[in-house]
Length: 532
Image (cartoon, rainbow, N blue to C red; front, top):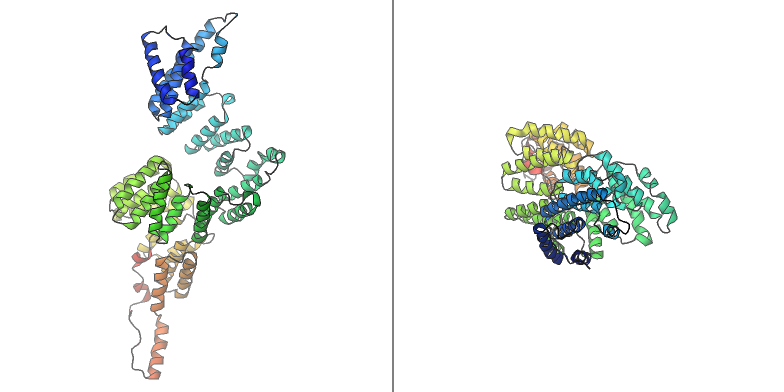
């Protein structure tokens, strides 16, 4: 057994630190004496050494060694073409054990993605002929294309994954997220569903997540509930997590918390979705529970964004610890650079500490990095609203966001805030009614109540506050609005009460505080606005 074969065996055994030391020494020997190892042996040593560097997360160094390995392989291929093979060629078994060139390119692409060099990753994988692409290569390409906004290429790659592996559920979700019809996706799995017993649920599963990605929360919830109630899929953590997220999107915080808690009980090490759960706990004022959740998540893993988001959010809401929250959100962004909620948390911290300039720089970076979508437009507009000089820019950004997504709640709330400043209450009412036509949200109902008070529509305002509190009984601002309305009286009611007092001769003065018009009393809208 040659020394290179010993390196190969250690690599197969997962002895990466040992491979790194020995292969490094052997490569130095080869550099000092080029005749010491054959071209194929040099290629193997470079690949095994690069693999050990990859395992140690030294990605730039690994890319360098993988590149050298591919150059060596190219030279080896030219040599083998020039030299005719002998009758008893020893090169055949040797070539059979050479590391795959395709696998080397895949590892290079992995390094590039870890280094956030997605264009380089796409370039290296694009260089692999279509027929030679394995399912994992197509899956990585699909995800990279999707991230780069190349939707058609992404769809093609996801479909290729399903052609090779028809039960690749994440590829199915990828297609649904790119607006491929659920029926078309289901047709790609029909053969395997019919040929394997106990897979009849898969078509319903695809239907459920098709509803998720089209934003039909109600039908998505009903379909997933029907799946979750089936005996074979009862208590599935992924389905419970999806239900929790859908209830959250639908504004049903009570059921969302319930489903998150059920999922946690089934899987104490669950991380996915726990940032949303922490947000809901914070909204209920359960800050101690949020702190405990953050600590528990850090004990599970600090390599995911969720622990940092939960802890950052808790620190911010405790106030006095904004700098700590900033550190946590920055780490969350490092771990998950495409998660918009991490940027939102960081910008919220900057605004809370009056660091408007830093918030603006970050919002502009997000806008340029993630593209002009409803979320990034609204985030940038949120910062622009903090500076009187950029109010018009905020208005333009919000209009663009609402053109893209008329039902995007955060954009609606910020546009309503702007209309309130301009005292355009009728426009605000029209905006909010339109947004509430196909969804029900506590904040939107509450703000609509505020606007209705400003135009003296007291009874409907009371109705809107009641709806808001039915959706979130802990919404303090809705409760304050209702309580203030109960204390305040309309002029008609005040006159009637005064007449009664005169008749009874009580001599007591009616409660006529607020002699100003009701619209003026409610004009100061600052106390009524702000995202929860």
